[in-house]
Image (tube, rainbow, N blue to C red):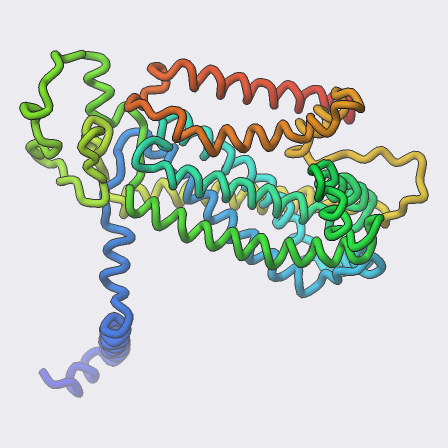
Length: 421
C-alpha cells in the first residue's frame, strides 16, 4: 500500500506515525553524529553498565544524594547571586526586600539554607558508613582522603555562607570565625587582618568572604568532586562487609593455605549471576576483600535506589525551604549589649568547647578540630590491617565511637545552654 493510500484510509494516525518515524530517524542521525565526535555511547556504557555490590545497596545511595544536594546548592546559589549585593549597607536590605516582594527568591534562599543543612547531615552519614565498612583501606586510601577534603570544603562553604546575610547572627559569626586564625602561631594576626581587611570586621570582610564563598571554595569543591568520582570509578564501590569472601571466612575459618596453593580470585560464576567487571581491583594481598561475591547492575538496580533517596532529600529541602524558609534577623550592628550570638548547629561542638575551656587554654581548644582532621587523614595509614568487619576492628571502632560521643555531648550541652533545653 502506498503512502498516499495509507493516509487516505487513516489520515490522523498515518500523519502522526510518519512524524514519529521522522523524529526517530532524526534523533538517531543526531545521536550517531554526536557519538562519532564525542564517544558519548561508550561513556554512557562505562558510567551506567557496571557491577555494584548487592547487599547494603541502600547505604551506597548516600554518595549520589550528596552529589545531588551539591547541585542543588549550585543552582540555588546562582539564583541568589542575581539578587544579593555583597555590601554591609545593601546586602541585608536586598535579602529583607525579597521576604515581602519576591516569593520565588524567598523559596530559593530557603532551599539554599536547608540544602546546606541536609548536605552536611547526609555527607556526615556517608563518611560514617565509609568508616564503618572499612572502605578507606587499600587500595581506596585516596578515595577517603578526597572525601575528607570535600567534607572540609562543605564546612567552609557553610560557615562562609552563614556570614553573608550581614544580620546580627551573620555579623557575630564573622567576628568569631575571622578571629580564629589569630590563634595560629606567628602568622595568626596577619591572617586575621588579611581576611578582615583591617582590625575589625566590616565591608572588606564581607566582600572577601563573598569571594571565598562563590569562587574559591566552589572551584576547589568541584575539582575534588571530579577526583573523587574518578577514584570511585577506578576502584569501584566497596560495599557492606557481608558481601565479601573474607566475612564468610571469619565466620568459618579455614586452614592457612600457602600462597602458591591458594585459588585464584576469579571463581566459577553461579547460574544467573553476572560476571564481575573490572574496575574491581584484584589486589594480590587482599583477595578476600577485593570484589563482592554478589553484584547487581548499577543501571537500573542501583540507579533506582539512588534516585529514590536523592528525591527524598530534595523533597525535604523543598518542604523546609517553603515551610520555614531562611530566617533573617535585624541588620548587623556592634552597638548592642543584649544580643546573644547563637552559632550554627554544626558549629555548636566547637562553641561549647570554647565555653568550657579556661581562658588560658582557648588557643589549645581551637586545635582540637585540627587534631580531629589529622585523625581522619592518617586513618587509612594507621588502620592498615586486612580486616573490614567492624566487629573485628575494636580499637578503631572504639576510638571513633568515643569521638562521635564527645561531639554529641558537646552539641547537647551547647543546645541546652543556648536554647534552654
